[in-house]
Image (cartoon, rainbow, N blue to C red; front, top):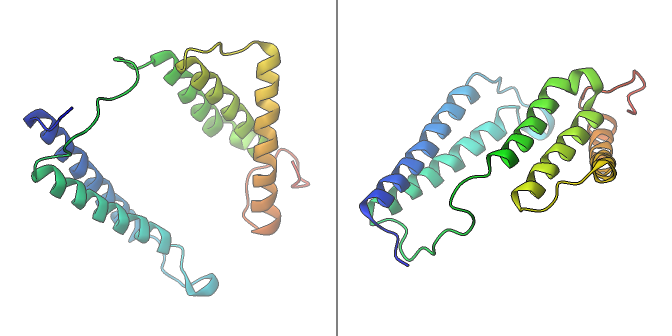
Length: 171
């Protein structure tokens, strides 16, 4: 199926321009970060500049391709005709809960809650049952099993300060 209509080409161009705008905003923010060299001569502004540059190259490529006729021979999009707003609400609730609670209940518990809510939304979006109490407990425990090693790696190995639940730094 050929999807390179005028409307599609305009949409594709706008996506490329959006990527370029995002790259420009990231570069603007990166210039305010100190460039003092840190570990191995790399400063804290290195990664934002790399991401900004890569995003600018990709955005430019998207605009160039769209202006040359768009992405040709695209297959029809899979999935439903309309978005599943309930599923999106579960995932968004997980992200908002994480951002809101991370300082109060610590990194591990906040990430476990985020994981459990997001998984519930993704299951719902697939049309599968979201699960009852047993599945929710399994999801929270799974989230903790994923978040705990990440927390310990960042706090104990990399010495990055993440919010914990206790003063000991292990939870």
